[in-house]
Length: 552
Image 1 (cartoon, rainbow, N blue to C red):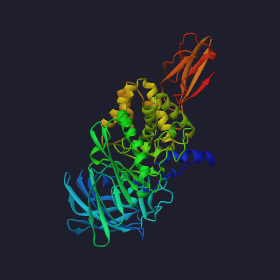
Image 2: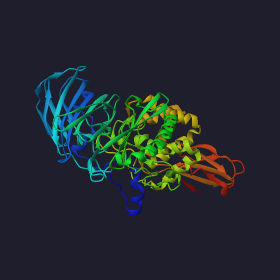
Image 3: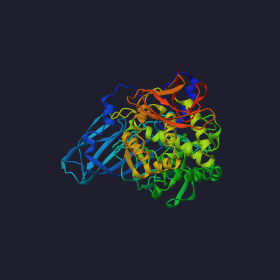
């Protein structure tokens, strides 16, 4: 991913905050290829994906992959043509249907398949795509996408995938759009017999093959977004543990390189168990008990692959030993374990339908870091951490990106998004209600895809506060609102200056030494009645509110 920055120092400060996504900042001139990838056209909505069986062989020496993917689908309307996706540097060997090959054509990374007769609405059917080629190699994972081919300290091959933003179709054929999650899938990966493959879900079995390879079969029983599906090949050993959670025992498995075994025995449980306890408290039960929770050593920093979180933070606290908030609180826990695991609730359980709403994944997960601190170290510590993150905000572009062209919004979706959510908590002013809203989101939208309006309407309804203009200002516009205060003949007046028409938001104001009071202001001046108020003693809660203040 690329940040638009003017100063090298700012670049160094901001880049790590995007540790879990390769969201590419393209120009605002969109192409036919962008629309083919980003739009749910009739050729994609005609079929609903229910099951994949991805079967791939990895030739590590040649950096070559080959195999097939079975598409099992239900027709949502009558059709005889559909689109799936596979990057054009990979070859479609053939598409088979009921024992026969189907004609297909390609345009950019889209593949169009023609069926011999119309498939009727409601019919469950399937086809298989056979493919091969050299996949894109990531130069700087996880900030760009693709395969990583490297070796561990003992010289053993170490291979992994990370493709958020770039797309799952960069290495396997699928309907590559977040709006249609497959209900379940089997991932079969064949690797040299002295190595291990770890993927999402649970290991169903291993099969020795005649060519010196071994196939690992992993089954995912829950809906999963395409970019979460991964393979990880290495000289792995397994550690097992159990977390007694809200829905009973949760299986924990740590797949680590042999060289990291002793460190993992201490570091992983120390971070994972309090993380799960904290996040189940705030967000509700871990969403994938059936598929377990895994951490996997990876040759890059980390990624939120569902039930198979990849880890490369070198077994230390902070973000590679740093606290990006500057408060000290970020050095008391492992950033990658906490942040990437937070995506199990926001990103994997609740998934944005369109990449334009990727802020849903990143804002809530950035905020989860502060909630983890809140749970373990106290509320004030969490508030200090989220406030400290403000220095990373650029206010360069809206957090919400355009729909239908596979483009996310500003990188501010991380830290500005987290600050925004903390501000909503402040406005609601009832921590238990706020907790129930966060848990309610994960229950209402359990294993579902959502958009901007789903989130805004849910929070507005459950809080009893109309948040429409607040969401719009902070997510759909670049600037932040300014509270304009005027002192006139011994009276205080206030109003909001904002880009959103009819903007209104409650704000906390007090007389120095007193208690904060809420005042619901809009874009017209209203009197603010504070006992014993004097101009020089007025204080606005700018610690929890991300706003400008202008005092005339």
